[in-house]
Structures are given as C-alpha cells and as structure tokens.
Amino acid sequence: MWARCARHTGRTWREGLFVLMTISIHLDSPVTQMLLYGIPICSSLATIGTELTTFNPGLALMTPPRWLTTETARTGNKASTVVIALSSPKAPDFVGKQLVAFSTTYRTE
Image (cartoon, rainbow, N blue to C red; front, top):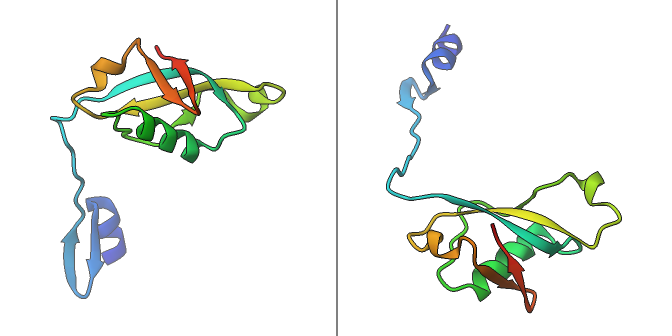
C-alpha cells in the first residue's frame, strides 16, 4: 500500500516519513539553441563542449553538445552538425556568429 501511494503522489517512503521530491526550475535563465556546422566527427562530444567553452569567452553550455544526425548518417563523413544549448545572458550575442574550436572557426545558425 505504501509503495502504491508513493508512486501515485510523487513521494518516496523513507524511515517511516514521506519525503517530498523537489525539482528546480529557473525561469530567469534564457535558453538559446544553435547549430554548429562542419564539426569533425572524430572528436568526442565532451571534447567539443570543452573546446567551445574554452575558446569562446562568455559561452555557457546548458547541456552537453549532441549530434544533429544519427551515427549511421555520419558514417563516411569527416564532419557533421552539432546542436548546442546556451544558457547565458550573452547567448543571443553568439547567434549567427562564428565560434572557435579546434583552431578553426565554425558557422552557427
């Protein structure tokens, strides 16, 4: 009975007490998604994120970068498009500009 109650109410049972689960939501942080074209597919997504935040001052990634296409679609290609989500007051400044990573500039949209 307790498990059923906890599952339906979004609460967890711990040591005889109900503990409410919390979720943080920040409405004051604008989010901007951008496409980066021509990123080398031989690089890991973690490395791409590190390169972008290191060489573009003020760039704050909200989530790790992700590929726009599937792995099978990238097979045989040297480069592909990456999607990034920015959460920074400066995020609109990067839209339509070029970003630097791997000693190269990349077009954004």
